Length: 182
Ligand SMILES: Cc1cn([C@H]2C[C@H](O)[C@@H](COP(=O)(O)OP(=O)(O)O[C@H]3O[C@@H](C)C(=O)[C@@H](O)[C@H]3O)O2)c(=O)[nH]c1=O
Image (cartoon, rainbow, N blue to C red; front, top):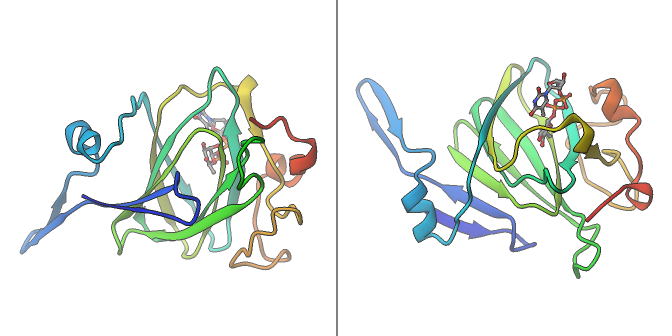
């Protein structure tokens, strides 16, 4: 497995081998031992799967607060996403900054977003399906977020405001300055 840190180096891009043959392909998308050898020792407890029908669907920016904070291992099984991790650790030199990467079924890459980051994504194709593992259970009470287009963060989303599709919840999330961050 290849591991590549992004500009905020706690966020990792991962590439697991994919073995193709006449039938299709086979790939180990998570292997506890291989991850541990790469220095990633996380205890995943829940798998999630979302479908976004339209291109330009934005989900985020989301995080859960302690004691339900989550690391997230995100991949795409159909389509493509622009995936974003925002550093929301107040004590961090990169607080309020973000990194982004294209994650896709075609590239078969994954992104690892640690605790202390808010996560968001924008679909780049219709019918995009995202699958991710998390290290803590969902807790509606601890499910928090930050407004996707907060100018202080300044994410360069691949969709303009008029065409972005968001849940009602995500449209009214607080800005970073008012959010309960880490
Ligand atoms: C996240 C989550 C949601 N739900 C429920 C709550 C709600 O009724 C429905 C849809 O939830 P949401 O609108 O929050 O789904 P969504 O906007 O897809 O939320 C996700 O966004 C991405 C960016 C993340 O990083 C994830 O951790 C998660 O927050 O699913 C669960 O039952 N378990 C879960 O783990």
